[in-house]
Length: 104
Image (cartoon, rainbow, N blue to C red; front, side):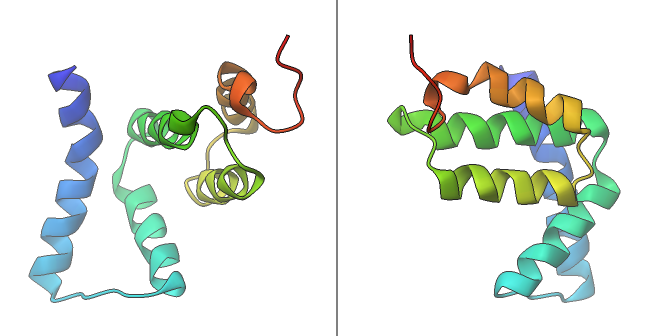
């Protein structure tokens, strides 16, 4: 678990280091886009997938992923250039928490 945590945190820490070194302070929705774009440029595909798994897990903590939460996850996935088949696999893994899907 500690190794996975280190792998996930590494690109965030690198981005924070680069941002601090460059004196970048970001606020607002447009800046979220810039942060996602920067993360995408420095993270490996495996790190991006780890982040996507984390987003689905956090959204599912209350046993339900709302339409707006799923929409935001999809928006982030597009920005990180996550393959559609990988995103579908994540949705299938969390389908019991998604709205409008039978929970049989």
